[in-house]
Length: 238
Image (tube, rainbow, N blue to C red):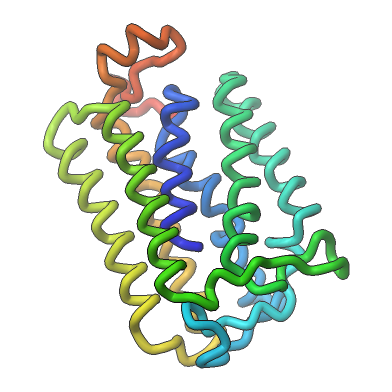
């Protein structure tokens, strides 16, 4: 799953209006953001096997730290508690924790049985990646729904808020198409290095979100909704 994780980040803005989109992107992609680090350190392993699955050539041999359910729940609690300690926004902390955990659930849909319940434990996976058409429909469906929720719930304050958000969505779509229909990566190291580049969407999401605000009509219907941006340039994201 790729676009689906970002879809959760966009949609989660509706549940935690005061939380920056950048933080939600960080939470949604946290497992895949730390995974390449562990690959480069040799703590986790992946093989490139062309033709392994219709939608992915990656054989995830060993990734208990980043992707076992037990550790994922630990990462969820850690990020949720860290966010609450920094921002004192209880709703946002719960949403951050749930968004982190959602990554494993979405991966469960597409991976073959390689997701461990705990390090060394049984492995699960429903294997939707064995069908490229089904995978594309699921990814695009999730992504479209997530974007619709985000753009329906917020409005742009300026061109950055408008074009910056659409450019982010467009680039994510281009990356997905290239990875799904292009040639497989040459080796695991290339995968790790390319995956590290995805960190760019964390500050990008934060930057875009500072130039958007919760729509007035929806804010009136939801008193918990607060403005997503601040006129104070140096303020850190919520």
